[in-house]
Image 1: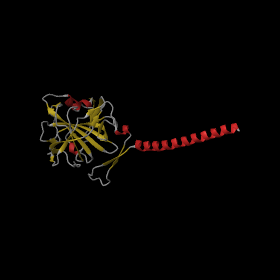
Image 2: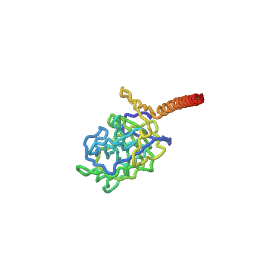
Image 3: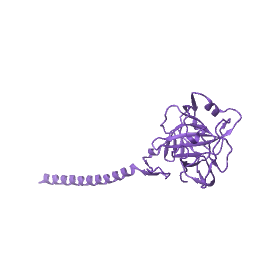
Image 4: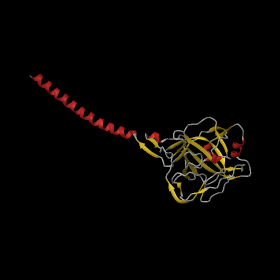
Length: 268
């Protein structure tokens, strides 16, 4: 699917799957604070941002790393196959500072008649501590994904979950805009996300990923080229090794000839 320019959206699925990689490792605890600065599409939502700017990689989606920035409680949410059993969504906001792109993990919330941990987190004034965000993401459910510039005019990847487990007592938030109906179907991931103790980046495998972005700021898809330094190094070692062996053999023959001459002279 090409990059969209709208949010929220209404999708259908066709049962097809997509091979993708979503791994994450959030800190055991993070200090957050209420933040009134929000993208236009998320006005009327509640937002908690990290107290200390974070550029540590917490999420790896395919080949791109993202750093955790904050949490939203919102009624602005995408719909897949008319599954709309929740009135609120939790958005986990992450950012790649190098590419200036975002990733949002959208988790539906079940309505509850009593305050929950999420209510408490968003109702406190001042600094609040978020404990183990890793537990908020399902390790069993697969997910949908798509790209859009419709949140803050920046390239953003949305990870969509449709199965709700977490609960929230409804909050006074702005109602959701009418979702834009999309004709092309969404594909679902082949496997669930993976929680890891340490985020392993593609660079650990000696692969350098260079992002090439069009200068006209269109919605053209970005191309990624992969350069493997080890391949060039291996070729260099193989070539150098051949020359070294040849030199060694010539040197050995030279020393043998010298020794034979020396032995001949000793008999004269």
